[in-house]
Every structure is written in C-alpha cells, then in structure tokens.
Length: 101
Length: 101
DNA sequence: AAAAGTACGCACATTGAAGTAACTACCCGA
DNA sequence: TCGGGTAGTTACTTCAATGTGCGTACTTTT
Image (cartoon, chains in turn purple, orange, blue, cyan):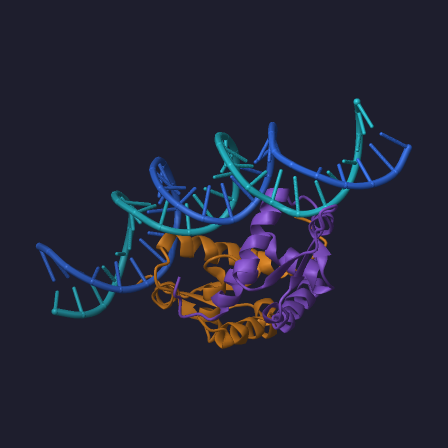
C-alpha cells in the first residue's frame, strides 16, 4: 500500500463506487441516513452503512446521534479534514462536467 | 452508470488501483512499457497492459510504435484530454502530501 | 551458445468490493 | 392492525478487478 505516489492517499479515501457520491451529498450539509440513501439511487442500506463507517474511521465523516427514547435520529456530516478536499473535488467535478458523452 | 454526480465521470477514468500511478508516470513525458513497469512497483505485465489499453480506449493515453525491423520500440504518452486533468490531479497530490500517517 | 531485454497474448485462479435477502426494534398515522 | 418510516445487522452470494504463470517472437549483450 506504500506507493511512491501521494495521489493514492487521496484516492484511497475518496475513490470507489460510492464514496464520491456520499461526499457530494454531505458537502451541502448534514444529512440523515435515509436522506443520503434517497440522494444516491441504487445504493443498498448495507453498502451505505459500510461506506459511512469506513469514512468515519478515516476521519472524513462524523456521525451524530440525536435519538430520543421516542425517535431515532442520526445525522452524518463531513469533517474539517474532509472539507479540505473540496478544491480537489471541485476540480474533478468541473472536469467531469465539461467532458462530453 | 448514469449517476447525477459528475465527479464520477472523472473518477471512472482516473480511479482504480493503477491508473493514477500510470497517469503520474506519464505526466513527465512519454515512457516505454518497461519504464512504466519499473516506475510502478508490483504492477504485473498483464494488468499494466490492460490499463494502458483501457486508457487508450478512453482517449487518455496514446500508444506510438517506433519499432523497426530490428528493434521493438513502443512509447506511451498522455493525450491533451488527459493533460486537462492536471489541475485536479495536482490538487489530489497536494492533499495527499499534507496528510500525515 | 546462453542469458537477458522488449513487448506482448492467453488461460486460469484468487480476492475483495458490492449486492441480495432476510432479520431486529421501535415509532407514527389511518 | 396494516402499511410505512427510522437505522441499522447478519449471513450468504456474485462478479469484476487483479494476479499468476505460461508461451511467442525477435533483439542485443556476454
């Protein structure tokens, strides 16, 4: 895993099938589990849970539990560390937008 | 494959285990197959061939054959399209560099 | 003559990420 | 009580990416 390419440090974290979409969804503010799921079509509960847990481990996502004894309420949000990736993410987005087909 | 997230268009192309390393290797100029292999420790011949073919299909890499009847000589280089990704790649690299651990 | 370099192709095995389907447990409104 | 919402967990399976090991064909170097 120790490649001489620092780019991999970033892509190990935001790469993969679902993580960029999770990132983009949380970029605009905290979201509940079911909101994220609705925002990302076709992601299963299991995989979304897995990804959120992994991103939490990596210090990219924070999980806040506002549940009461009455009601479940969990919110996910990006950490400061994650927001520091925004320039790179924006660059990737704008490249993707200008690309045809 | 049609996600509402343009970031995926970029990551579908430069994501994956080896492509970012191929990109970084070719960023500094054309390289022969064996040079790329030496630059990327642990990549197998087959996988490197596969990745180069796929990147060629995607219009990111150009394959130039300078072989004579005497000598095999193939060079791989980035296309203009690929170089337009440089700002995004640089952003990812610098994020990776500043990140500890 | 033998070893090593260049640039592959092909068949097969392995692995890890992702998907499927079921279950828990509690709440709310009609 | 029935359907729907919240937020998951567990067990199992599938599949695409990756890796292994072989062969081709021709070259230069020792």
